[in-house]
Length: 194
Image 1 (tube, helix red, strand yellow):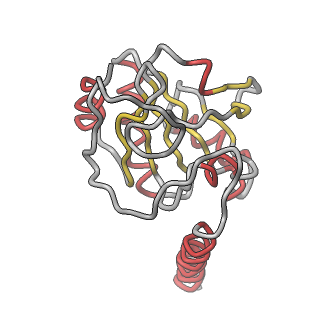
Image 2: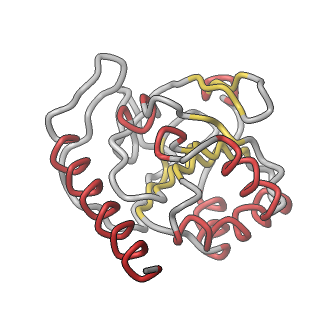
Image 3: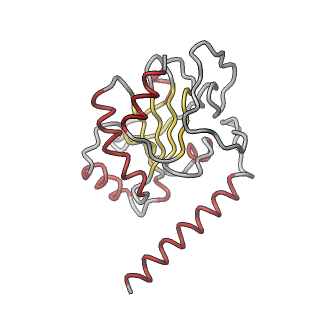
């Protein structure tokens, strides 16, 4: 019986991923500049002297601004952190790679001068208690943002999770990664940013 439940859950997740992938190509919002449907190398970086003239999702673009409520009830806006290095991470509690990278993200947050905005895909969760339990289980101290309508995830065209963006102190996307990051890669990309 347990095997059937697990199989149904996995099939549902695969079905949702396929549905989301096909639907995301046709969706667009006025707030965000869509990214081209291309595959990037995970180590793509931008030179510090590259001019960023437009808002977009490509490395070298100005990161689209957004505002979300945090798990603690405060409001966080990306543009409020201009002048600081920022890591935006899109994740969910049910995602195994997300679980795998959380301890490294917490270590990164504790050891470096980085702002981490962990955007939870709240609409995909069973309930908010799951998110709270996850934060306690992993002893996370960085802000957890709640994307309860998936508006920011849609605007950032998030397909696989986790997906992370490293934003330099000028608000420019310096690095984008699909899948879990480890601590060493976080440090490597952090040290390249201005």
